[in-house]
Image (cartoon, rainbow, N blue to C red; front, top):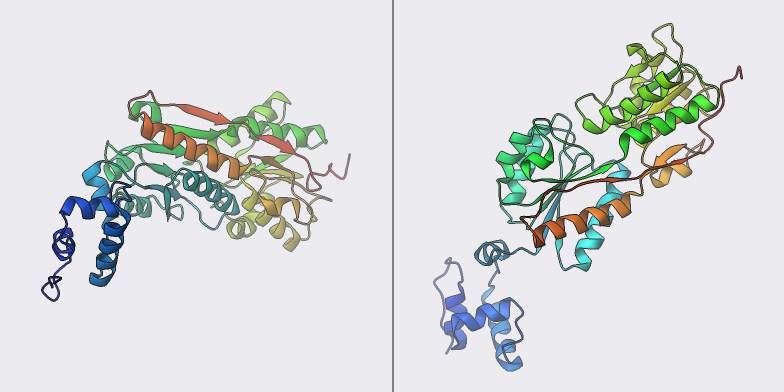
Length: 350
């Protein structure tokens, strides 16, 4: 007769084994899906597991076996369609390899990032893919995840040391070249007063894109005054609110290279509120090529990064790291491509 357990006490493998008159090891094999248990014994054990309401603590089992069936993905802006596409690519590739994706979002807060990372680490993921929040510090990230969990940084580097020094892998976008390509495109159209709009200086990807903008402007003998380098939270709402700052000074730009597509779409909304017509009397470029970019009015000139493919690439890199934890850290830069659409018009005077 099956044995009963005391009310309120957690059901254990020993309880299940005693009720089925098998060894604890046999129950463990069933839970792990091992083919070593014959189908009749397996069916009997599975029925007893259901009857007693046994809950399999996979995280604890992973720790015991030093393996994991999950990988954590921590992004800095879950509301940005770029990251939705990126996450879809990650989840697709991980799922095809038998892993579950644990998703966390930091909302561009380094403090929340610490809490999210610490919480996810408790679930024992086999690795972590992190797009760092603005202002992230490498020592803080290290304190949250420890030295044994493989980490892949995506597109940004925390301050306080390069990932090679911390044995972290990096998948970056070709940010500097992208900023240069967008600026050169606007210069070729005839623009001479061009702003760089959006993002913050404590974001490595923003610094890199802005460096590309400055390089292109200087190569063309054009000025890059501080008044034309407008910082803001990289969302469309904040970009729309900051639009007026472009016209606070005497420079009066005719075009803007935007940090990302969300900023560019927000800027176009703000321009219309001020009586400007993007794509007609003011040129705008973005960065990312989210799906909405091609459907916007006007359609958005941008740098294509193929975020879903980048997600699949990130998943492959973290799986490779998990398979070879002692390999040298890798630094991969994914190419970008300029996609010209209607938002980048020549200046009216040309």
